[in-house]
Structure formats: C-alpha cells, structure tokens
Image (cartoon, rainbow, N blue to C red; front, side, top):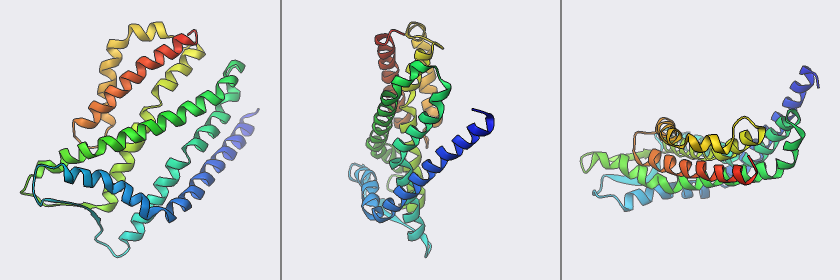
Length: 239
C-alpha cells in the first residue's frame, strides 16, 4: 500500500470508530438517568461510610438552566466512548496488523478479547476504588465544610479515573506483544522487576486524578500483579 492508501485506510477505520461512538452515545442518551444513578452510587457509598455529620450530600447538582442538558450530553458521550471500546480496539488492530509479520495474524482474536477484558477489569476496579478516593477528599473538610458535588465536575472525575484504570490495565497485553515481536523477552523483564515496581508506582501516582493515596496505591499494586502475570504468559508462549 502507498502512503495515500494508508491514509485512506486510516480514514475508513476512523469513520467506523466515530460512527460507533455516535450510535452508542445515542443509546447512552436514553439510558442517561440509569447511568447517572449508577455513577452516583460511589458518591453515596462515600457518604454512608463517612466519619462526619451533615457535611455532604451524594446528590449531584447544577447551577445553570441548561446544566441538566449538558450533564446528560456528557454522560451520553462518555457512555458512547466506553461501550464502543471493543469496536475501537478491533479497528485499531485491523489497521496495524497488516504492517506486522504474518505470525501476528493468528493472535488477533486473543488480542481483541484480552484487550476488552482488561479494559473492563480496569473500569470495574476504578468503580470500586472511587468511594474510598471520594471519602478521602470530602473527609478533609470534616464538619466545617459543606460539600455539594457539581454534576459536570463529578462526571469528568469519574470518566478520567475509569479511563486511566482501563487503559493502564492494557499494559500486560502490550508487554506480551512486544515479547512476541522479539523486542524484549520475559527473562529480561523478570530481571528488571524491581525497577519496574518503582516505575509502575511512580507512573500510577502521576496519572491518577486528584491527590489521594488510595487510587495510585490500588492501581500500582494491580498493575504490578498484571506485569508478573504477563511474564508468565510470555514464557508460556515461548518468549
């Protein structure tokens, strides 16, 4: 394929990705009330287990007339992006794989399936960690500060932490692909496990939103376990 043909192929893949986000975003628009209720759950769990009185409400609020519309639209877009991840991943793989050696072709179903599972696992982990992180933040005000959660800011916080966890959980898949490509191997990665330990926790601290200690600790611990599992998988594959 020429350079122009590669650009045409990229354009087709991007159109499919964007169409998937739009279509699933429309679905998210109609499901927005249920999704908002689901997203409020970490907030309410944080309130339930808080060690302070009457300083926080788990109900979201907006201060503008069009705030409810904007909030619903943001939920729809976020839902479209998250639900379309399998399509985005499959289209990205379909665009990249022709440039790889033919031995990579048979790994396609595994890569897509593993990528989806890892992203979902990251999102679920983030969802379970959120009440602890929220409790840490709102607990700083004690009984002296009344905290009212702005809907738009809260959705942005939830989206960021879910995407950070979801994308970070793709690390073992990337490492295994690098091993299969011969760029590195499980033996070398095992020797560097101590250095990787500190790098993972440093990166987890930098990429997690907010300044709580819970999110980077959980993310770093899970990523290191996934790192070790990826080495076992690479060794099982003979790399």
